[in-house]
Length: 262
Ligand code: ADP
Ligand code: MG
Image (cartoon, rainbow, N blue to C red; front, side, top):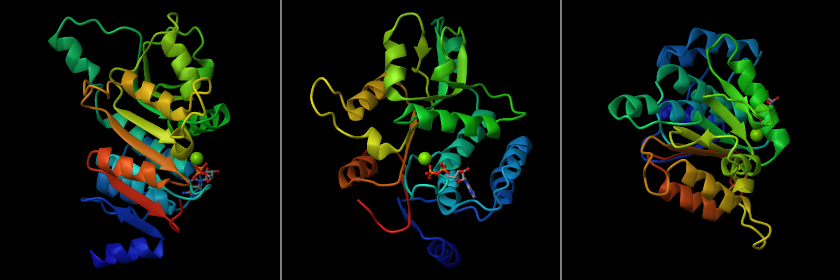
């Protein structure tokens, strides 16, 4: 335990939460500890990044062990891969929750079913994240979708959907494109500091209200979706969002890299 704490300290990692998994020290630990898919490991190694970054070291095992995660690390510190890798591992190692439902009852599930949802504040960021997801899913049977090419698609499932709250809500409200979030298993708020911003007035609805609507579609409000797990990744964190997440998240793990900032 002392060694682990020293390792964290040497990498500028501060943690919070009752149970926090050991950080991985290198990519091969993912295979050793979590038996991650060989092709996924290959895709990670192909990126040419020799070692995980500190936020990746701690956030990846936390998400793999199904903790809800609140992560704060500087811009450019590799937060995207820190959540995409565990999502891919999750998709590969579990079956969709809607399956149980369908077999047990005759309830008909309609639309494009989403398993993992990543929200980013801008279209450009969403596009970048989508591209990273595509690279990491080469040779894997995973359906990644970005809303830009969702268009008139008649997809029936999206293992991983990357979207801006704006565009997503627009499509959720339109009748043509049925996106079904009722069985989402992971939702990631990337750049969550921006996604949690309040609106300025009724006309300019802030991200926060949009996020609340999206979470409602995911069945969070009335606990209809007990499978839902949430994670937030950001470069900065306001005290308010921190307090909210630490209280609200299940089995929360807080990862902070570098100096405390608000
Ligand atoms: P953040 O979201 O924290 O601002 P990004 O996920 O956008 O950072 O990553 C910033 C850059 O670092 C990207 O070019 C990304 O490919 C690269 N990167 C990601 N993981 C690693 C790693 N383990 N080692 C080196 N570079 C990495
Ligand atoms: Mg980022």
